[in-house]
Image 1 (cartoon, rainbow, N blue to C red):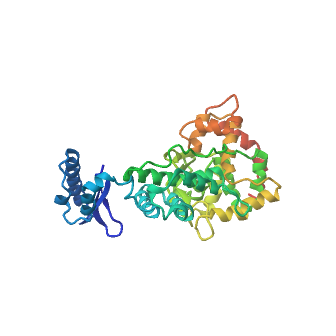
Image 2 (cartoon, rainbow, N blue to C red):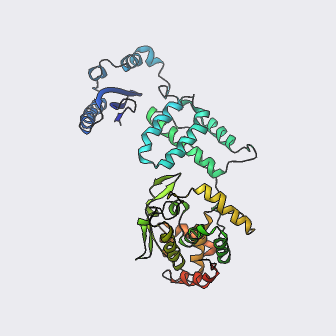
Image 3 (tube, one colour):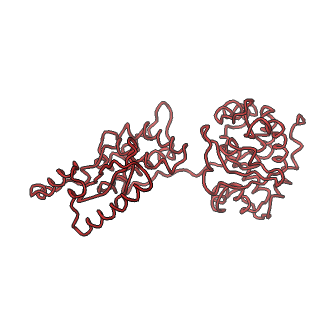
Length: 397
C-alpha cells in the first residue's frame, strides 16, 4: 500500500508506492498542506486501483519519470529471462536508517530519539552503513551481536544493553524488507536472555542512616525518594504545581531526562502518590526553601533542577561509602519504598498504583519474596511503620 510523504529537504510532497516489484517515489512541486495531501491521496487511490485492475500506465501519470526506463527494461524479453533479484533496488543501510529515523521521531520522546541516534552512530552505521539493506545476512547480524559481547577495555556490555542495540537494527531491517520486498534476515533470531531485575532494597534502619548522613540540604530530597517510590526522572522533574498539600498528593505528570522535560515513562506512570507523614513534612520544609524561587521542588541555588549524574556522584555514592554500605544504584530507593509498603502489609493493588504499575503482576514478579501473607487496604500501615522510627531523623531539622 502506497503513501503520500514529505521530503525533509524541500518540504514538498511525493508519492511512494510499489509497482511491478519496484518502489516508486515520484516527486511533486506541491508543498505540504492538508489540501494538497488530500488531493494526492485521492490520486494515489486511483493509481492503486488501476494497478490492481492491470490498467495502470506509468507514463500517463509520470511522463518525465526516471523510473520509465527501468520499468520498460524490466518488461523487455531479456528482462523476463533474467528476473531482477529480490530487493535489488534497496538503498544502503545508512541511507534507509536515516529515513527510518526521520519517519519515527514524531512518535518518540526526545530522550528515546537521542538513544536511538547514539546506537545508529556508535554501532549500526559503523558496521552496516555501506551495505544494501537487502544484502545484510543473518550470519552478519549474529556475528555483530557476538562482537558486542566481547570484553573491551575491561568492560563487557550486558545482555540487556545488547538487546537494546539489536532492537533498532531489527526494526530497520524488518521495515526495509516490507518496503523493498525481500526476506528479513531476522527470522529466527531471538533476544538474549536477561537476568531478572535485581532488587536490593535498604532495611528501614539503613534508610534513616542514609537520610541522616547526606548533606543537610539533600535530606528532604532523600526522604521523598525513599518513601514515595518515585523514579529519579520523576523526582528530578517534580514541580510545585504538581504538589497538592491539601489532598496530600504528589501528581506525577512530567519527568526530567537529560535536562529535557518529558512526559511520563508510560501512560500508567501518570499517577497520584499519597504523601506519608515524613514525605508531607519534607515537602513542607522544602517549600519554604524553594517554593518562591523556582518552579522545581528540588533545585540548585539558581533555581535550576538538579543534575542527576552530579548528585549521584557527589552525594549518593560518597554517603554509602561513608556508612560502609555496599554500592547500590539510586534506583534502589524506589525498590525500597515498594518493599517497605509490602513489609507493612499494604494492599498490593494500592502499592501498584503508587508505583505506576497498571496491575499487580509486575509487583509480584519483582518483589515476590517481600510479599507478606496478610495485607491491609490503604496507606495507614506504612505510615505506622515509618512513624515508629521517625525519631531517628536528626534533631537538626
